[in-house]
Image 1 (cartoon, rainbow, N blue to C red):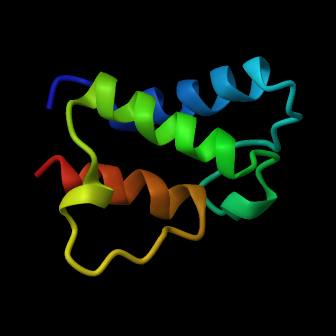
Image 2 (cartoon, helix red, strand yellow):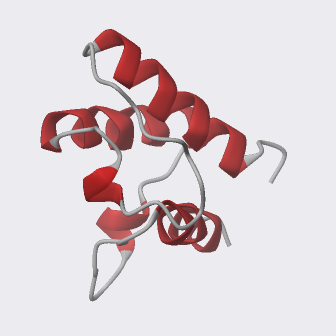
Image 3 (cartoon, one colour):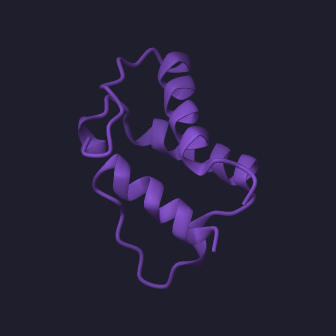
Length: 83
């Protein structure tokens, strides 16, 4: 895939946090998503924008979806969804 999934996800987290006036925690792979500073609306915006920019939504195609817990899990979920 020509698009770097990790950098796309990180930039969307940062952009949505700015737009929604949220204080974003440092974005490390071990960051628990619920501790990121984003709320459920922010995550919905991030997922919708990632579908637009990456061209797929791994949540809609996965059979038994378990929502990723950490940022690293979230990135891996999208990287695996690209395959």
